[in-house]
Length: 244
Length: 244
DNA sequence: GTGGTCCAATGGTCCAACCAATTTCTGCAT
DNA sequence: ATGCAGAAATTGGTTGGACCATTGGACCAC
Image 1 (tube, chains in turn brown, orange, yellow, purple):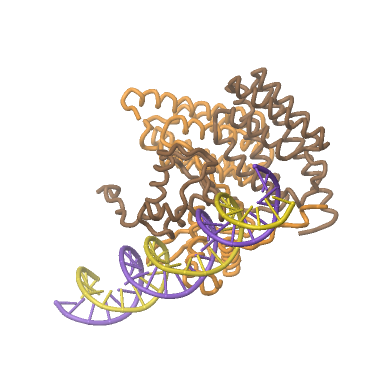
Image 2 (spheres, helix red, strand yellow):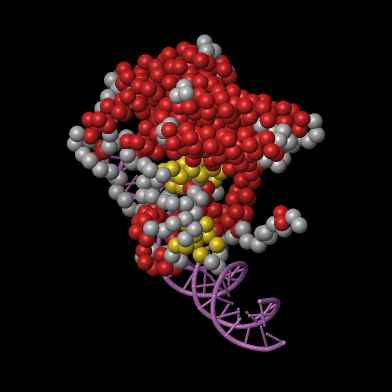
């Protein structure tokens, strides 16, 4: 007797159906990330469901980072959606202490190096031009403001992830980046944070432009190493004043 | 003027506040995974918010896989929660095709290699003994059943992730592993899948036992490479029969 | 025991408002 | 005409109350 031939029947799945319909809509209208999707009221009317049900569905999407809701403005698509999408919610225990931060840096080290190497292998000429552009912007911001600029720095790295040909790199690191900032930007001493990592951005770019995967990997590792050093130094200073 | 001393006021964050309160409750009551948490109606009454708001909050948790709701029965905790938990929802675009699978393998390659290297550096003697035990079990299963056993193979790798001293490795790869199996175990030709990767399990172990990070990293990379080859071969075979 | 019926509890959906933030429009002063 | 403050419309957030669908236990007849 094969028990698998008796799958549980599907009796109610309203909000799931709403999401499916929404995926269809996004594809039909070819909505791009950043665009606004219909109001909750319109969706409710069109789909013949309650606005509450629409909201439950959208809440799911928001929780998954697919969509952003702005009160008074509307609901905006954050990433491209496709009908066969896999959701992988990770809940990472532990959070605010130095140890967890170093752990996320170890993950980033692994991914950053691999992404840089893949980028050196597969980036198109247009990709490389774009990376060079971001690098220029970042270096200029560094000179004028005499310090690392999180925003421009992040843009540069994102360009590399995109050029790696594997969107997962950007997604995973972006998720960690968000957490990183939410918990650590302010509390830790961030005065000259990342100063030491500055020169490696250009060396990474040069390896990529020269199609040198191993070199790009090594330079990326050096960059992360300097960041980790900065963090350790900051944590050491911090240790003198407070205790959790 | 330090703009950071003027944080945005908290005018609306009802459902977020509900989640925070819920985290507090779970900790106060020391709820374990599997246990039932209070009714939506009770939560609404106790927290002085609408039941709809409670539902939005719980929908978020459900989407993150923290909780499971069963109509007519109740809402049940699925994993242990802690106040400083990091949520990292990943959505993998494109699902069932070969490309997305290779993309997840690239991520796994990066993480697996790093985890093996860290493990070689930091594993305790007990950790190494445990890894050896899992390896023996896996090899025996391989011989008796004459083929890779997903279960025992996975246990072996998990032991390495744990010994890496960084729980994030296990969590991230575990999430991908689940997806991998859900979508690919059956459809693809899995007859002698992973046969080629078998010998590398022992070589990885030997490098770890010898405290050789670079060797462990290289062997892990070789293992993933064989798996990727197997997948490419399977996909090539598949291409002859069907077309999406 | 076995199976059936009933019933209370619980999550799922719906409706109709109102609140709060945002955007857009309007009309007055310049 | 132009610029800008204030009104109005739009949109997501919240509320309270109602009803439906499913579940699980209590109770009963056989």
